[in-house]
Length: 202
Image (cartoon, rainbow, N blue to C red; front, side, top):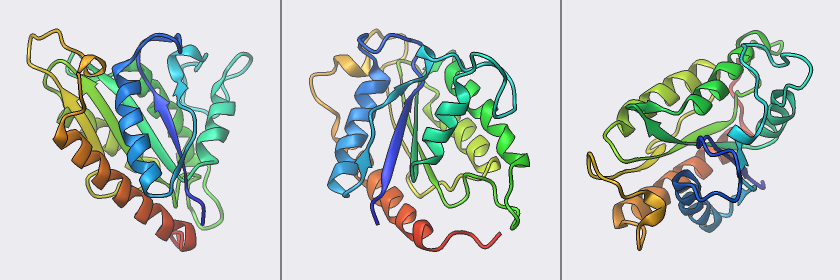
C-alpha cells in the first residue's frame, strides 16, 4: 500500500519564496518519511490561501478550504507544521483546526468522521518555550475530530529564550531533531499502514 503525507505549513508568511523555519522542519520530516517509503507531497502554505473563519466545510464564495479539505483527506498522513507565537501555535494552524470541526457532523453510517483511519503528526518551531503546549493544543484538537496520533508524534525545535536564531538559520540539523524525525516517520508510517488495511469499526 502506497502511503502519502501532506504537509501544511502554518507559518505566518504567505509567500512561498520567503524562507520559513517551519518549512525547514517539514523538510527534515520529509527526508525521514522518504526513508520509510512514504511519499510526501509539496507543502501547502496555508497563509497564502483564503481559509475563511467558520466551522463548516464550505463558508461560501472565495473560500479555499473545500479544495484544501479534499487534498488533506486524499492523503494518509497529515503533517501540521507551525511556529510558536506568544507561547501558542500560530493563528493559521488554529484556523485549520477550527475548520475541521465540521468533521463532527460529517460521519458515515458507522459514525466515523472523514479523518478516521488517518494519522496526524506535528512539526513545531520557535525561539521561545512552548513546543509542548503547542503539541498539546494540536493533538487534543486533532483527536477530537477523528485523527489518530502515533507515539512520538511531534518533532520540534525551540531556540534559546530571548534569542534571535531561527531553525532555518542553523548550520546543521541538531542530532535529537533528526533522531526524533526518524522515530516520528517510522511510527506514523507503521500506523498509517495498519489503519489503511483495517480502519476503525465505528
